[in-house]
Length: 329
Image (tube, rainbow, N blue to C red; front, side, top):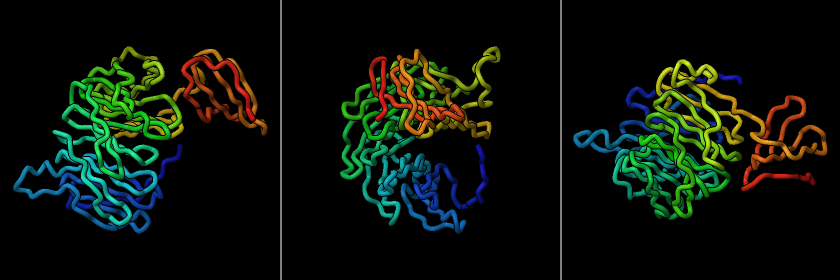
């Protein structure tokens, strides 16, 4: 992995709390404690616009202005902010216009995410609930109740908007059905608040980070913990060393082959996800060009591997039982 340091962008008038990139990678958007959104031109290394998104006068509760999260949809039609003023706001990121306000939470909104198909928004709040919204009509589609403490994060998974994950101060990670608001899994293992949960596009995994300094990987197909990075106790020598302190945020790459975590120790760490089937392999086939191997297994997945490097390239999920055979057309 090659990391390249890019030029720094600074605005000494504002306290930056969150950021998001345009899908083109040419524009960075930052949110601030003062409720202001700033647009930055990466190539020109200068500010390209500013707007008051959640700003309130200082003589009121100044912390009410804070923007906790910014997300931009894949189709670049919507930009959503989560604020301490109990609302989410949807903007047109290209014209920097306010499109709608999502009202309903009874506490600060700490996180927000947009589905891969850009149709729905999910928000997480200190009121212990999550809400699902329609991106175009701004209607609240579902009110999800289940956590016993403030909900700290939320993340859609898959290629559409059918499922999402959340994490909470109550120490749990939960996965939900968007259409019904029903809980699919309750994933327990962290010893303390779970600061972030993230889902990928192709795999069944949920990634989570917590105050217990660990990064954990969960399998949503059976609710079991698949892997762990970071030791809760010094004697856990078989577990890779993680962050020196609380883990704050995490991300999964779309193919679920890499995990990224950040901590209060000032480090961002990239983890190679464990590859290969978890159970017996029942069938193996070459692709027509002989560059890849396709396998299926009792672990309910189909996987592809590069013949030369042996790297796992992709994982297909969806079966509810063992896969006994496969064919390539």
